[in-house]
Image 1 (cartoon, rainbow, N blue to C red):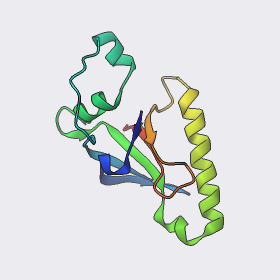
Image 2 (image 1 turned 180 degrees about the vertical axis):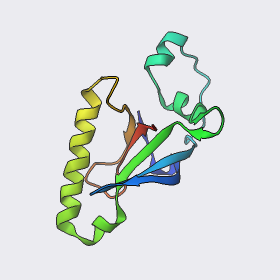
Image 3 (image 1 turned 90 degrees about the vertical axis):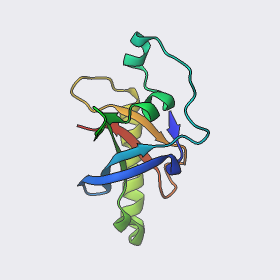
Image 4 (image 1 turned 60 degrees about the horizontal axis):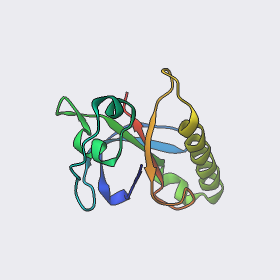
Length: 127
């Protein structure tokens, strides 16, 4: 699924790397609200759509289930590093969208923006 940046509220920073910052997803507020479409239990185990993510963004009602990965703000001052970061994040998006393995983190959603726009993000399972 895809999310508008305004639909996700960031929590604490969980980590930083060479190009990106990872934060917990504190709240998910869908534009238009959550619909009441029900999914069979087996399908819900496999598919996490926008509604599922908005309803169950917290584990046990307190810990964020998801993390959001964005380009670090420091890259905006360095065009060369910004381009390298965009390429790195876009390649990660492509790989995580097709790889399914129990030892590789799952990508659950992406931004509805172009990867080349400021504010692009990935939504990942939080470890």
